[in-house]
Image (cartoon, rainbow, N blue to C red; front, top):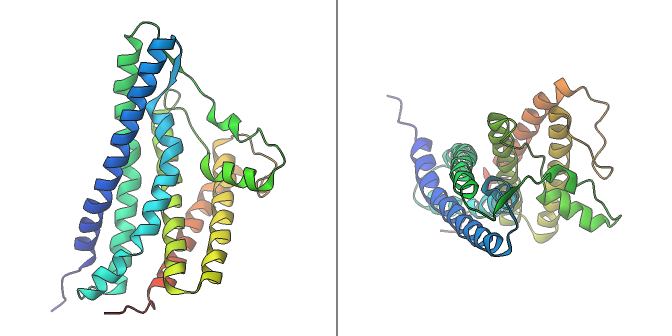
Length: 260
């Protein structure tokens, strides 16, 4: 008799725990947004949309959550869960979070925009986030940090479904890169762990370049040049890149030694 799969339970558990952290992050961002709106009301100025604020901050939040998710492995293996079930459960949870976060952010943002539109002296700032990465100063480290934070963006007012999908894909990559780096440090020594950071930066840079090609967005000079590719090839390669990341994480975690 075939035993019942364990990974759905792992996915549900991790989705509950990590989802609580994501809701906490979104809650903090709501408080920040309220504070910005109050300041804008006092000064009679503009305020960014909640969706745009979350868009920038969620990259780092999901990256950190991805790193921390590595340390669930010890808990599950210690309680009889296989490394494979841990991996599959965590992967399903990461996909769930990457879908839920943009939807919640979009709905809260629309509510906030409705409120702001009915407040005198406050206007919504239609920020062009994509133009920010075009403003480079020649500093390599600064450009890398900027590219790591400011991902390809679609304004929800122009295409809400594409905006949600783009954010979802962005944060899924950041989660998996964080997970990959965390797993590398967990299993190997510091040198390989530091090397995984470089690999993570390269993957994020390639992801941004491919996504910008797919969305027909401007491509800064510091990005890895992939403009020779047709835009139709961008999405399949992005999916292959996601598969590569998942394979790397699985390869690292399936042989991790766990001290009981």
